[in-house]
Amino acid sequence: MSRPPPDGVALFGTFDVANYGDLLFPHVAAHLLGTSPDDLRCYSPRGGAPDWEDVVQARAVTAFGRDPPPALCLIGGGNIVHANPTPLADYAGAFPDPRFTYASLWLGASILAARSGAALAWNAPGVPSPLEGAWVRRLRDLALDAADHLCVRDEASRVYLGGSTFDIDVLPDTVLKLGAVWPAATLQDHARAAFESRGMAVPERWIVFHLNDRYIGSGLPAACAVAGRIAASLGAVPVLVAIGPCHRDDTLAREASSLFEGDVLVVDRPRGLKEIAGLIAHARAYVGSSMHGLITALAYRRPGIAIARTRMVKFLGLLEQLGEPDRLQESWEDAERTAATLLQPLAAPLLDRLAAADKLIDGHGARLRRLLTSPPSPSAAKGRATLREAVSSANASFGEWSSLDQAMAEDRAAADDPDRVAQAIAAALRGPAEAALGRRIADALARWPNSLRLALLEAEWLERSGDAASAHARLTALQTQHPNNPWPVVRLVRLLAAQGEFESARALYEARLQTLTLTQALHRELTSAFSPETPPA
Image 1: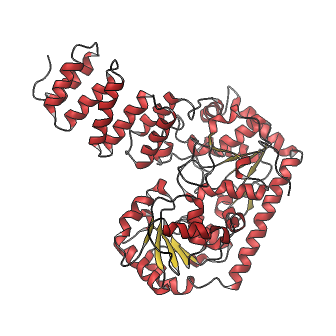
Image 2: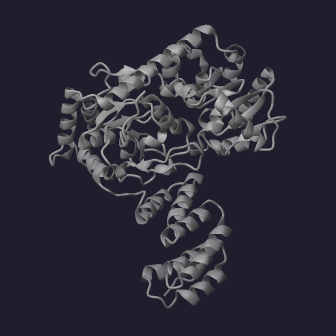
Image 3: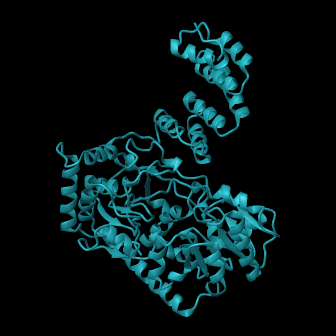
């Protein structure tokens, strides 16, 4: 199998957030292309990668223009084909228009392919719902016309894209090839280390559970009771894995740990992808609300049950292709009622259907490899020219088109500019002070340790997340490090007043700020904070 040329493939997806399934796609795509993940250039809305082993560092989508043009732009996988704002704190402020965050990964990727002269293919991403808005539907049609190969992961996605108009293949999620990427035998040590590193002997058998607060139904204690009974029926030790910490799975796993009787392994901070894959590959079974948890189980021919609402088309879209719709259950109680049947070793008909799915995915990989060496499709090349002209025109049909084109063209370099990183973090701090945001701030400070603005944002995050003592210590250090800058002192006065330490706030203000040339409004705000009963003159 020939390797793609250097810089040959640009892969687009959400590879910069702590979510197991999304982080697998570079490894699977590299396998299909016959290359190494390190040979791909991966692009994500913000760029970077979570602090896990086995992950590929992504670049910000907006950095594309500074890199050598690729031979192929490859979209997906993942549930990324939409133009809806996202609640993920990791992506707050990534684009001026929040609709562009996910749109950058498919509409934006199509524009970048058109601009760079690259071929364009879809790597079986998902479309979660019909696309809303005339601007995105019309631009969708232009983007689909620009692709050399269109492929989505389920029939609903094909319909949502206008499948009757375009030639769109349907292919099972490519992570079903994970067993070929990382054979089960290569993951044994990772599974063993997951237990031993957490102080537990490796049990004879275990079952992996994944909890997501959207699908707990009658409550966490009830879900854990069901999981405990399922584990007991199999004679297996429960293993709780936080497959998607970006969705707060880690917090839920820790809360659940005390609700089990007997031994339980809690993997709330996974070391990496191979640890999760190894635990599932060598488990007796998998039960949970992660689609890629279930896909991993099936990839290693382990039985599994998914717990999610049936209107989540991605679950049924996969399982209907495999002839196994009953593996989707709407509640933990429903899963318990079906466990005796569904958690038996996989039957021969399903093994045959999984083998057929493998062949379909292999065929998709062969087609992608041909795109790297074949002349571009004349119709797709024409479509890319039309797309490029449509979005770059001063008279673009919709304002969003030129705005998205500008967002993709701007070298905002959010990943390389501390001021813009700080600006995005400040925007994110208008929302909840989540752990993911704290990690973003820590990552930014590791790159720019002398940035006062980032340090002040860290103090604000500490205060808002409930750690006022650490915020106080941070601001105290900053006022020493920056004696001529008033802002650490301003923030510390505010913090002291908010903590009810009015006299300390007053003393610090009078000693350090009272005589400075600050705005009158700021002086009024600070003095009112520690003297609310005495309006300032």
